[in-house]
Image: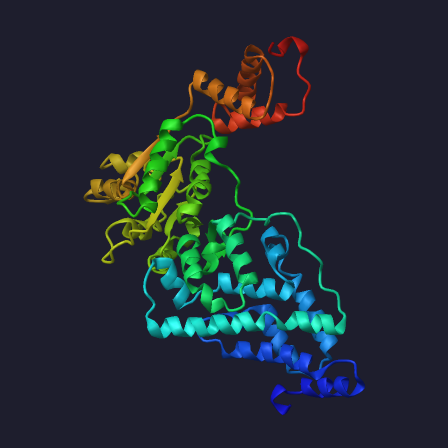
Length: 460
């Protein structure tokens, strides 16, 4: 009894008073304590809800209080609680353990992601841990039933509040884990899942943001290529290059250059939804973190997935030198860039770095006047854009192209306005607002949604 710490006293008291069968209480305690034996999946012990529960179990808290604390901590996990896939689980504790298993990042899951053999030693340790986890998942339910504490009935029917890679496959593996008595028997199925969906955080989201570490974007921009109108030829170049990347073929770093509002950023964002289930993850890197790119490449280069580093609205002033870090990472560093990571940048500047006439006129007042070889400065500034294998230009649409985008968007939104009437309003909107662009076209069409249209303008 002493092996279970201070909580054993309340167990003994409850047993003497006939309120709680000691065998049931020990089942719960043992299931918690068994988790401390995890080896490969030991990172699960660092998760806040379980960490807090284990700390509380070492105190003299009554069992009812511990159970209530667990339920409170579990309600702080919104992605889990809003997911329909967890309806297959017996109770919240089993759902949490399964989620912890699927999202743990360790040597075994990473080997599965890369399609590598982990070796007998790691494989046997993983099988042992899977058995421990499958046993531990039952403890809280038996305690809750004994204490007659309510377990939430059913699970919300709503889907997750963010996109999950390989959602159908994930729901299927959750059902199989919930119905299996020994999870080590599902080792091959789990290996298959991690190979398809990725390991750790990478099977939790399609998109990530770098902020000193990878942070999943739980509510990514839902834009898809089907939602975008115009620039089909330019977008097809981006799609084709990305398809080569996810297929493991040589692919280019891309620079998407063009006027504002032409859909450059939306094109890159849409890639996550097109290729996410094929192993692509989008990582947004802010301009201020360009110096972290070597670290990012080190992290992502060893993974079994493909990654696009998305740098939006990239440009530099003449006195900024951070672009040299990016140059070395694109091409020129001693270390070979990983084949599964490419950089896609968008910019309104063709050469990315602000140019001045003084860069081109030797002897004029300005930078070039103080340099013996002013052309070297010019070449240095032009060389960054040259490191991108392909530059894709998104030009300002002509009036006809602009109207075609408006017509396509109006059809998407279900507007029945006559084309002549629609064109007149669209051109007027462009003149009053931000000029012709795909963004202006979308803003115009959205302004008409829900507004009554003149009878004579409705198409027959």
